[in-house]
Image (cartoon, rainbow, N blue to C red; front, side, top):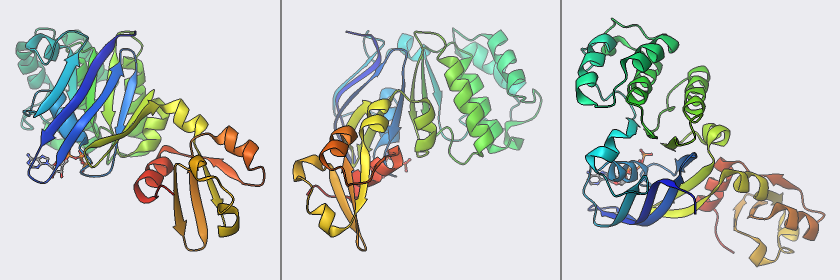
Amino acid sequence: MGKNALKITDLTKQYKDFTLNNISFEVPQGSIVGLIGENGAGKSTTLKAVLGLINTDGGSISLFDGGGISEENKDHIGVVFDGSNYPDTLTPKQLGNVLNTIYHTWDSKIYSRLLDEFSLPLSKKLKHFSRGMTMKFSIAAALSHNPRLLILDEATSGLDPVIRDDILDILLDFMQEEDHSVLVSSHITSDLEKIADYIVFLHNGKVIFSKPKDELLVNYGIIKCGAAQFSLFDRQDIVTCRKQDYEWQVLVSDRKKAEKKYPKALIQPATIDEIMLMYLKGEKP
Ligand SMILES: Nc1ncnc2c1ncn2[C@@H]1O[C@H](COP(=O)(O)OP(=O)(O)OP(=O)(O)O)[C@@H](O)[C@H]1O
């Protein structure tokens, strides 16, 4: 059995109008796991639970195959939340001095190198940073205490494609060490298509699926057809289906099998966005 950076088992958190309902998934060591789901699906709640920022009502969270959210384990986690979590009247130089006293594992050399690599000014107050600069700063700060697991909540949202690509490169660079792992939530599934090894799909506080990304992109397919062709499909071959105007959209989980069985059907590969939409808006026949 491989090692896990994170293993969540039957995690439950009850809010007044929302329940994170018995969710389980893993972040295998050395992998990037993308957490997807619509607004309010429970992504941030899950990440907050992993970081011990909220009390939970059931289940367990194991970090680095050795216990829960201890102070020692927390030292090995780098966190990047949407927006800045640092006092914005300080400059990166001042914050470096503060963070050095907070983290036992803080490495000033890495911090200076990353600020330089990301072209971030040392003496400009954070409140004058653009959103892209703020996100890069948060990542630099998270990486400077040598984390083994990096947790990012919406790290690329609201950023232009060039900065998003820079951030994906930073994550891939972080993954060069074999004991490094990443858990990243995002609405931008095309970013996850580029870097994630596994996709965990949350909906209404439940895990709909947790699968290797390649399995989704290689095996799943979408068939668009009229009512006559739709009526020929075996119901057990259909994951979900959806009717829009006169067109049927059919999600299949085994494209090769469907191509053989229905040679006249035009079966396209499905993007993660399309798979997510078909699960959310389609229905089981
Ligand atoms: N402190 C809280 N008290 C009550 N309800 C909460 C609290 N925090 C979150 N919720 C509810 O939990 C649900 C899940 O929220 P969460 O922030 O985890 O979703 P999300 O998947 O991260 O959404 P988004 O993509 O919009 O960030 C929402 O319905 C939200 O209103």
